[in-house]
Length: 346
Ligand code: SAH
Image 1 (cartoon, protein in one colour):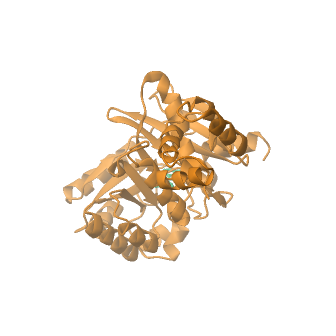
Image 2 (cartoon, rainbow, N blue to C red):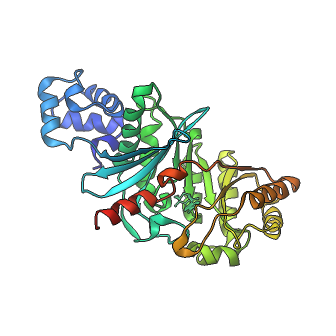
């Protein structure tokens, strides 16, 4: 059984009934949990029930250990602590259309992408659905002061969502539930380094999630240099699965492409990428790589990025540049946790 925050109303109803409580307690408890209330604040419940919850259940699935606000763009980087003292990170980004939270799905990651700080020490463990919900509740608590709340999620923190499939799906069912946070599935992006079986499975869930594929290369050779997953699955196989996702859901998919100087950012690469993507219903999200000096991987220049986007556009490929945010606060994947672990001698 997951912690309370990862349970759906029907499951909480069964739990409450097993505690000798009336069935309607399930829904009441679900609503209050998803509002982020502490047990004491759940005054809709009876006092003895509140006491029992407090005595038998953990107080919260995640708490904020560190918070850094960017002075430049309102981005907030969060470091959360979990019940077993592990920590994961998240980023809160403010756009004109609302607040987006970047959620972690695992402590660390097993995929080994060369440019990603989350994967340096491998995968420690997968998060439960409750621990993912906990990240959203922490962010909402923080936002309450300014009357904002999280309206979009990107599963782009640490971890590979397809390697924690069941818990990620449970998390999505919980946060999209109308009695709870009621987020729209269309406003949730699931980002994967590209595991075709997982993508095909997701296509059958009947959810309107936005699927993001971290492509980062125009051909298999280049991709193998920076992403070990490319040795297991070819780009063609992976894009095939994305096409199946589009056919099942009607949702065009997103390709993430981080431009790395000297690796994947030349005019030739842009031409190759254009040819590769012809005929797919997709959109390319370009970003300059957050430089990883340890690996000698550097973000492409402004000029290279502008040229790359021009070539894609001229070839009829839909592409935009994603703004880099939170550069001044270790905004990129795994950077804050890494620094925290180093400073605390772990
Ligand atoms: N495992 C999933 C989701 C987490 S990573 C995936 O691979 O998609 C979220 C995104 O950040 C991915 O697109 C990933 O490739 C990208 N990323 C990781 N390190 C980066 C860096 N240094 N600069 C730019 N993007 C990076």
